[in-house]
Image 1 (cartoon, protein in one colour):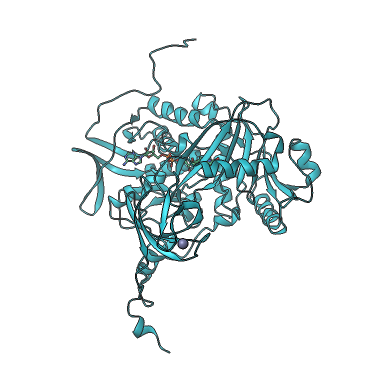
Image 2: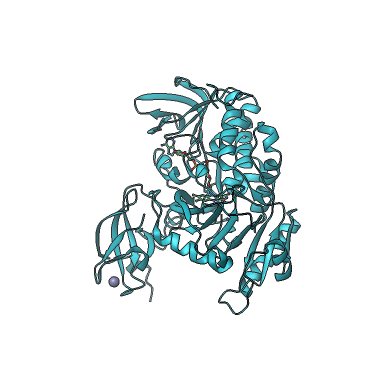
Length: 96
Length: 404
Ligand SMILES: Cc1cc2nc3c(=O)[nH]c(=O)nc-3n(C[C@H](O)[C@H](O)[C@H](O)COP(=O)(O)OP(=O)(O)OC[C@H]3O[C@@H](n4cnc5c(N)ncnc54)[C@H](O)[C@@H]3O)c2cc1C
Ligand SMILES: [Zn+2]
């Protein structure tokens, strides 16, 4: 079922104006275990219900933002700019 | 001949509190596994579905059966499934209307033609009858196709698999269901699995609401809903559920008797025995568990169909629908045992391509359950391939999303 998404910059637009970026994931530290890296690369919650996910307004302002959408009904619960994403232990591994 | 009888395809039973094997999902994979298990003598089996039999993707797909994949893991697997399909009407004593009328994968760009040529080579090495053909032969096989030059995407060449075909999907599901029932398997529609029981480090049964059912083996064959079942054993799968849509037109006089697919145009087309034109394409561009179709996709599929068959302009659409597809990152299935979850088996990652794998999927999973040994044919498809970095890159089989 198609739906509208509220771009934080442009307002309500048809979903086909946007590019879906998948569920929001937490990136593990660079020295994480193979298990954690596998989970990050391939494991997906694939929620049947509310899901935090990335969207890009690619036929509009081209900004990335985050939506919470109920994947069962496609009801968009909220949209917002992405929070700051920091990589855990970034300082330690940033050798430059 | 009894046209109207009270006989049903499968019997009704009260749920017992113990089975040897419980299969979650009464689609083609769950039912074919049950059928081949029963043939091997394992008959204390229940197939449980939250909805009606075949109500998932197995009752909503466009039933294209082919084997012209790209990888040395995928081609033999789909080839063996096609072989089982060839004898399946006889095996199940049920007319499945399997029509091996052939299928063309069109190439409209140099890079697409290169990809098709690569597939042709791999297929032939692995015993699948693929050949590259040019516009003259394409026109002979599909006279109605528009081969005019100077279009954005002219038809340059095609990969042709003459043994590919189309089957009646409902009949396959019902045939396996009836066959399994006759061998003693119980089929329980409208029965939702709400939890999976784990005791002493292994999976020992399922919960249906308040009712607990024990089993030595629990297999999930729930395609688009697999992540929900996996959650019940704290397992996260590399799957994302996307809807896939298709539509049919009103019946027309026969004009095409092969299926034609274009990865560049994201569309595939064939005509049913009743004359309806079936059109399908790629998955919806966002994940969802909603099985509702969209006007946007209808317009896009229709426009792309007209690129190939302009004379279909003005033909009425009869119905449009959607089903759920469990897309895996490498476009290959996920089958077999799960490390750390003894007693639990997976058959998923069937995405947009899994109906054709129904027979071999069930055959190999049944062998695994009955013997405890994973058949060589499905070893590469185990879930652990993701941790081991041994993906099956079947994605390359279709540069665009039309990988039905
Ligand atoms: C429009 C469309 C076109 C397609 N075209 C093709 C094609 O041309 N060729 C091809 O090879 N493939 C095609 N496919 C893909 C194919 O249909 C699927 O891969 C295949 O049918 C999957 O079969 P299955 O038995 O694994 O799952 P399904 O048939 O989806 O069955 C899963 C079952 O699990 C049940 N279930 C889920 N959760 C629970 C629960 N908690 N408790 C109990 N039961 C549960 C569901 O009710 C469902 O009946 C297409 C799919 C679609 C949607
Ligand atoms: Zn915007």
